[in-house]
Structures are given as structure tokens and as C-alpha cells.
Image 1: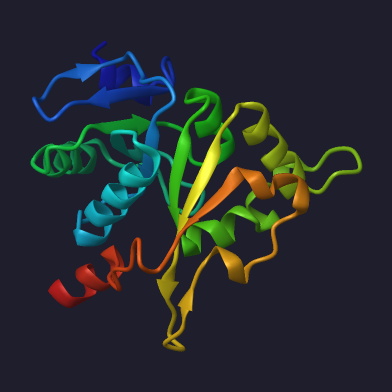
Image 2: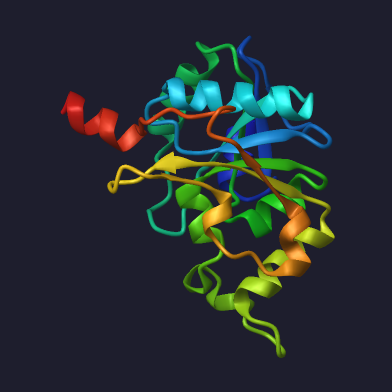
Length: 204
């Protein structure tokens, strides 16, 4: 089997697709990762990654999972087209079978995960962790504990809501024991009022 076959068969957790077209099963150490569907890639993705790279001093990767908690398995033909689209941007792409950050953190220990505000809100929503209910801790606490144990952190980019207000990390309460895991990009560091959904809707 080739590496993509092995990924879909869950024989390996991730592959790296380089802009040169090379596929590798050797994952980076302590990477800066922007996870998304990249359907399509847009300026928000590019500028968010650039802002976080400037803040951390790390080169960044896009990351896309073939599995999603809200959607069916990504068809291979769609994966091929998205790999090609990201390669054309000159950005390396991590492709995983890890739908949540708990799984991603185990694949990429000591990673900095770059997330948008909506993803940040979902990260603190217990409905996404029905299998993490154990002991006296909440499902969200159990999830964040695992991510914390894997040495991972989050960089959160804000966005302008339908109310016209810029929402960022400061508007959501984070349990004090996890506060150091989260760093926000300020509005001056990053603000792009665009989304993949809006682009797809406008082109359709």
C-alpha cells in the first residue's frame, strides 16, 4: 500500500505532503499547525498562518483530517484535489485521520495549534467529547488534560461576528488551570473577515 492507502486503512496516523509533491510518513517535531478543510484555501488561511509564524518563530503547516466529527469520511478524489491546491500555495500539508485536537495532540506532541474563534468555542463544548466522560472531571477537562499532557498549546485568532463586533480569546472564560495553554492573536496582529463557507456560497 502507498502512504495514502495506509492512512485510510489507519495503519499510520498521518502523512506529510510537501509542495514538491513528495509524500512522507515522517511527521515534524513541535510544529505550528493550522487545521482546516481548506475548501478553498483563502487569504484568511495564509495570513493567519503568517501571523502565528511571526509570533512563534516557527514555520507553519496546514493540517487536514480525512475524518470529521460532523461529516463523513473525506473521499480520496477530494483529498487529491485539496493536496494539489495546498501544494500550489507552497505550504506543506499534514493529512491525518484525527478529527479532534485530543487525537491530533497525540500525533504531534509539543505542537502549537492555530485555531479560529469558532473552533476555539467548539473546543470548550462538551458535546464533542461524549467518550471523554470519566471520573469527576468534565468531558472538556478530560480533553484539555490530554492535550496538556502532550505538551500542546493553542494560538487563537479572533473574528468579526454578525453583530459587527470583533470576538477574541478574551471574550470566553477559560478554566484557570488551562489558561497558559492559550495565546490570542490580537486584532492588529490578524484580522481577515472571510471564510471558506462564504467563498463557496459566493461562487455557487
